[in-house]
Length: 334
Image 1 (cartoon, rainbow, N blue to C red):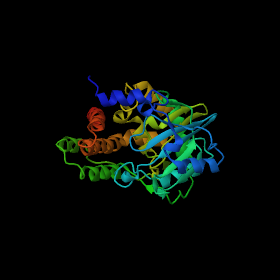
Image 2 (image 1 turned 30 degrees about the horizontal axis):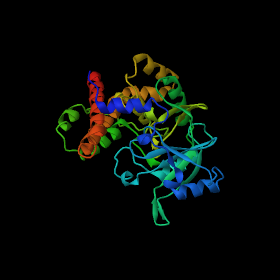
Image 3 (image 1 turned 90 degrees about the vertical axis):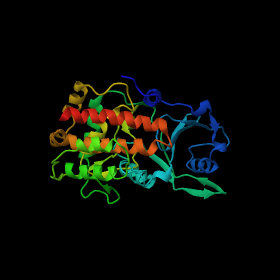
Image 4 (image 1 turned 60 degrees about the vertical axis):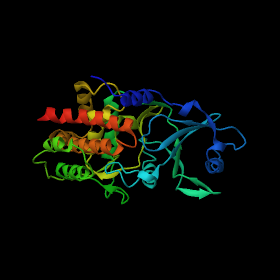
């Protein structure tokens, strides 16, 4: 099968730990004096010394950098908040990521937050909403579904009751997942809609999950970092409270997997995940309702393909490839 140039490009980036933007290392003073001032207050940096600001690979919406001075290395995430309320599946919410990282600070699931601030104007220069957190030295996940299953088990099984009120509500049943897919398709004008509607499950389960979980919300392979401290999960800008099946679907999605590695998950890798995830009821529910949750993802891939076609054709092609893989998976279920 011929692979799109987009997917080859994305996968080559994710196989690297860091990638320089235009092969340039920039002094921080030229990028954001306010950022330098904030980190100086935290005694993380010496403002009199050169600071290297290096673009990290990955990130389809926000810009993420490695900031280095001597032995000090921190991650700086600058948000593109123009998209925060428009994405129907993955809202881009910096204030929520701050709360999530604070909430998970003792969990060893996520990086440690060091500082954050909202979008503002300082000395007539506009600064984006920004998070600063510990740099996870390591590499983006490529294999070992057992480790992912164990991490997600810890996240989903550690939910407190009641959940934090800042978590957005997520679908609690296969039926609600399909309704969300329907709503996404209402925002799409593309000929593929009719084919996708034919794959919609006829009678998705209306049974709502009783034990709600803290759901990451954007749980694809590219957001797992195999660090020196163990596997960690990044990009917590769209978590919610709902069914743990949502995170499992995102991770196992053939379409989503195409963004971070060359081969789809093998049957053995999927079975390793199922056996290592520490909640048999969730796995049973995923297997029962898999068509509904993956159908919603297919709707999202079509939405992104259509909406990006004019503004970013390369990324649109990537979502087109993801859609084709997800549709093939759904067809195999019939």
